[in-house]
Image 1 (cartoon, rainbow, N blue to C red):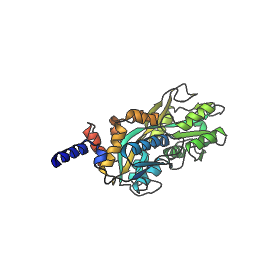
Image 2: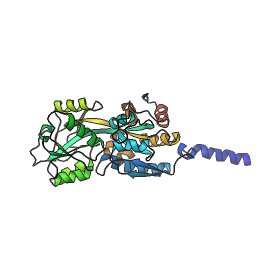
Image 3: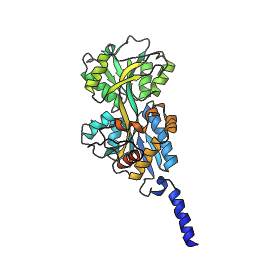
Image 4: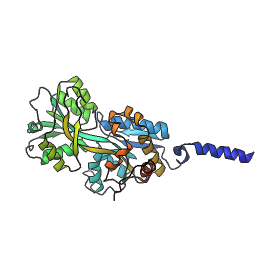
Length: 321
């Protein structure tokens, strides 16, 4: 009788998901570093945080931040348990070149691929700005200080020939769009997944012109930021954008600290990789949140828990020293 009861109980435990069997060392809550409101990170992270809370039983709160440059440091220091980063800032932070904390970020580990972040640019249709070269002498909003957008657009304006008189303005995505609408800045350049909420709202409420990079501009950006790759924003991604736009992009990955429980890292990765339709409801950019994109990261070591999920499911995990 007792032996039968023991077998029944053991069978019930075995039937439980891994998350319910091996969570003794999980925290009761985690904080996810995202970005500014109006940016892709915030919408993507809010939805994914709800998934973690519902499916894994860990209360996942989303925090608005300055973006990847800040997120990688918050994860490194343990202030946040999960963060979203573009690989450029993450690689620089790992090598000790972060503008926020210029020491090697050796504890950061990759979990799963998210999507590509293309650089984007818009002006009001009434503006005389029709190309990137026309930004000379203009006031340009580049997004929040410390974010991917501000980091790489500022680097471009500081290093590309012919942009020595651009005035940089920093604010969140939605605020920057409002500044363009109100005439406080002449152009809004950004970096976020598609479609970017701040641009979508801007284009619905105003007549907008989106700028496309010519070969020279795109080549210059890739020379200044070698982690960039060519990218085409499809036509009609936004209202007032009937033609495709040529630009560059960086890949985004979710990160955690190496001290995160291996089982929790495994389950968070599984949650993102095994629920593509649900991820798409969080944000359309999640169409690229696919396990086959794991190889896009060759600069940040993978967390053992995340690596185990990919290997168990037949995907090669890049070896990063």
